[in-house]
Image (cartoon, rainbow, N blue to C red; front, side, top):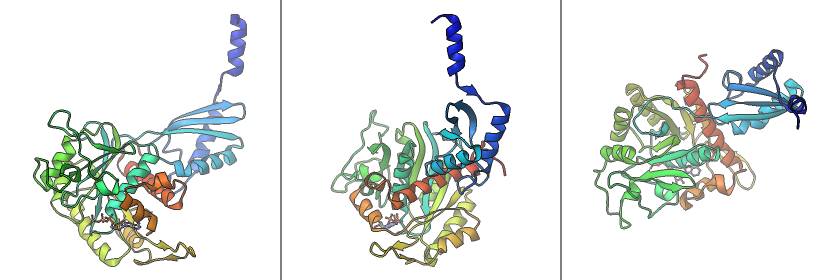
Length: 364
Ligand SMILES: Nc1ncnc2c1ncn2[C@@H]1O[C@H](COP(=O)(O)OP(=O)(O)OP(=O)(O)O)[C@@H](O)[C@H]1O
């Protein structure tokens, strides 16, 4: 092709850059999209926005600071209506570290706490990890419950032992691309410990620091229940952590949450919000919803203590069965309401992390 035809060809087929007027129009439309995930509008959250005119409409590219898959369709629909043309959305989720810390490669660390045992903290940690992974993030899980580790069973990793490449560090065990470390891996199959670390908070700190985590967007720490030594160690030795609190709607569970919150406040451990587990039960036969542990207790309490409610998860037999079998609902039933609820929870957790602590977040 000669130079003249080449010029003509590239003029004809080069995607047109957006004019100033079009840029303003798109930004206005993005600003008008508000939701739970985007309370201040989408325009203030997306960065590096690029607008390309294509034959049949617009292609919008940019960076998003948290995953938003559950709203992608609604966003496209909103923009199509506002801009009156077809919209192709190419917003890529870029998680950035919010605090500095010494574990190389791990961007953010979130401790999953509960005031009281048995409210489903470990189950929620596992499902949150699977959901974050399903949303495209690199995820790790550290089982800090050194006295009663449940991650090996819940993740279907019983009997596994980690390798050490140098006699000092440990390689995490992988489950569906999730990096996992637990003191449960450091015991012989008959329960005898094969690890040099002393039980308790030292063991937890050692596992955290001596595991070769690799590159992770989020490391979830499944904490023991209550407000004991491990919680203290976590805050004193790993000060770059944020926390979520799992509760049931029951009054006794909420009473213990208050104790936990008081302690976290004293120790300056930032709390992203609360998760109401076993919020309601859906009858598999008639689909009727029953509030077995009380109605909206966690939601009302979150309001009272001025914390975001990150999600409400049902009491569901599939959750219990998946945990017992070490399986993931995200794999076995990715389109179920249950899998969607955990992905929405994962999005809210990342969004709150961004809005509350990321320096890129809008200030209001
Ligand atoms: N949403 C749910 N639906 C059904 N069963 C659940 C749900 N959440 C938790 N469970 C079940 O409740 C039991 C306790 O859950 P889990 O072990 O996660 O609680 P925990 O708060 O981590 O307990 P601990 O404090 O003892 O570590 C488990 O049998 C689990 O399968």
